[in-house]
Image (cartoon, rainbow, N blue to C red; front, side, top):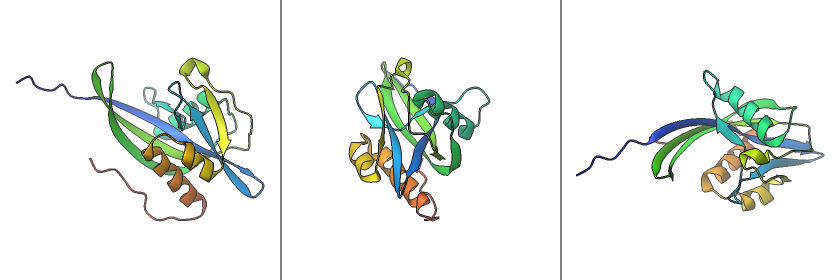
Length: 154
């Protein structure tokens, strides 16, 4: 019997970005090259803290410059296959606020669109259940629910 190769570990950080539009709160979604809607995220650079990486990646992928970190949401993990190799991805997500409306998707990184959406619109558009959970947690934080954040079981 051939032993299974261990999954390659990858660590990323990203943001659930929101802005206020009068009484409404809008959330920023990005569409990837597979036409799935989700949140901006990317790999940590050598020695970079997850919060700093989240701000950098959000800025790079969306073109937003005025970004304020509002708190940690959750660290999630999942496994997938890429070019036949198992990858175990850990991603730290943060709540980030911006006053900016205009975005500039980073097409070189496969970001095909950015869109501001209400909570209900965003929840319906997001492709992955774990990302919908992050959106719900972001909304709870914005409404003052300080209950403990669920952590994945390893």
